Image (tube, rainbow, N blue to C red; front, side):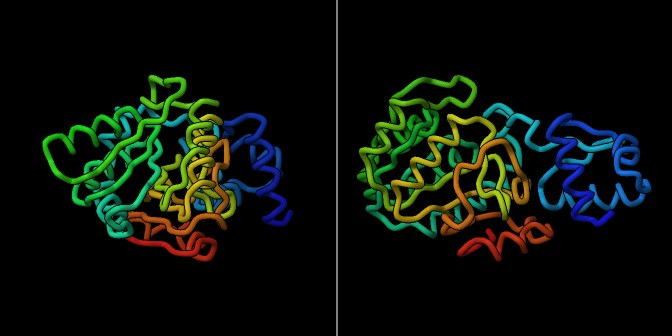
Length: 258
């Protein structure tokens, strides 16, 4: 059996069962354990699964952790990404920020610029920006998009949020997806988060994706932005070690290593 055929069979099995044991794959494909081990390694590098003890789990089956948990994970890498992203911005620009741990850290860095208009669906980002501007003559303005509130992500979503996004035209959309895959694009776990990111990207002149190394090569349930529509990817230095980064470099216009 050719490797591509094995990959297809494994993908199909994961689509049905979400979690597979090595033994199940060995029996289904009638190949050796060593062949399965190599295939799982390569599929993991492509972001299509995550290897666990005794088998593999589909990355699309794993929900994103709560915002509070994400805010304390890989803080150093996310801070480096945020500082690199600031270097892509110019004072006086209008930008979109979606809800995420990396964009939340980016909000702390935006205070170094002046005359910025930040449009966001994140309650925590809006409060952080408002607090940073209080008593300072930065001239920065924050616009919080209305809509239904998701307590888990501390963000708004739904038809009202999308309608508000459509009223604006931004210079840059800075977005932080669940995963970034060279073939599948920037991805979210839930549809309403993907809808917000997609609308922001469509109404911005430039799309910048902020993704730490743990997201590179990872797939999730919903594509929000095609790889071809991403102008810049900003990631951290640990991503250099990933085979998936070389694929991403070929698929995206520009990759910045923070």
